[in-house]
Amino acid sequence: MYGDSLSTAYGLPQSAGWVALLDERLKQRRLDYTVVNASISGETTAGGAARIEAVLARTRPAIVIVELGGNDGLRGLPVAQIKANLTAIIRASKRAGARVILVGLQMPPNYGAKYTNEFRSAFREVARDERTVLVPFIFEGVSDTREMVQEDNIHPTAAAQPIMLENVWRRLAGMVAAPVK
Image 1 (spheres, rainbow, N blue to C red):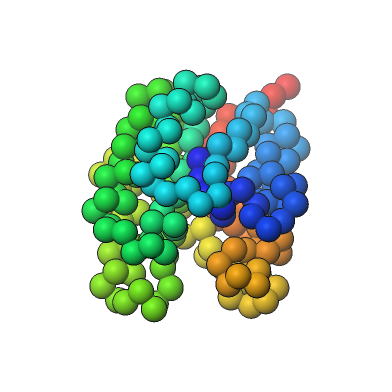
Image 2 (cartoon, rainbow, N blue to C red):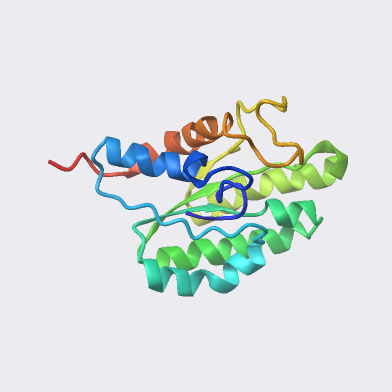
């Protein structure tokens, strides 16, 4: 797992986050994968691109789930820059022999229609161009109610984490091997 605060269980016990829930699911199904969470709260795509080679060398992953871009979007960084950084992360991961899942994000409408549309499309375009699996929107089905969003109005609560896991699992399930006997 290679992401930002959405993947570090920000504001929650680590065990309540979707990445920990993914690890539990893999173990329950006896799938021979170990989840390494190399996510950093506050990470941008530029930071991710700068450290990907070292993380890949240290972890040697079979699959890399990339969930980055939200902090770039919240800062209003150029979409072309976000796309270039995501592309660099995906290409480095593939060169290291890993399969990649790119997790899509969206910006709230107050960023303007032009920016929000370009930002949303960026993930689809990068996934298409790099021929990688795409989770269109990690928050699909997560409502903006108090039950699902922390008081900062950004980070998901524990109640949202299983939904986020399901959104990723729909794409990941076909990539993981059969149960270990």
